[in-house]
Length: 131
Image (cartoon, rainbow, N blue to C red):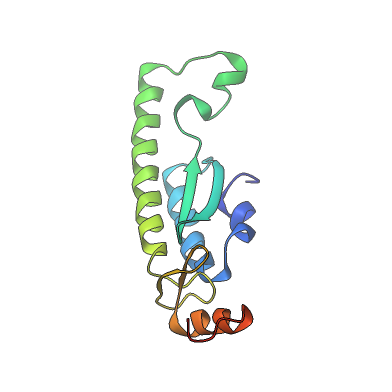
């Protein structure tokens, strides 16, 4: 559990937390033992990197390889998990990272996905009203 989405949620804004909670539930349904290697914001969108293939389980530590059936099951789970992650990453580009309302990419020093209100508030805090 420590390497699943709830552990990483503080690394991004609260506005994306409902999306991440939903993704966590979806990933649990695919593989209850899924692991996140990294979760961050980049270019105004979520980036989520999962442990896949032989990174999962104890394969690296033990040197044991999965049998054919286990390998096929893992491939199906990995494909479905990647599909879910891609969809969540794309959706994050339309959700304000700060408040969760509909947002769009705003480029200043870096790209952040923000709604109009959060964008205006951010500009005021940074001393750039009307930019």
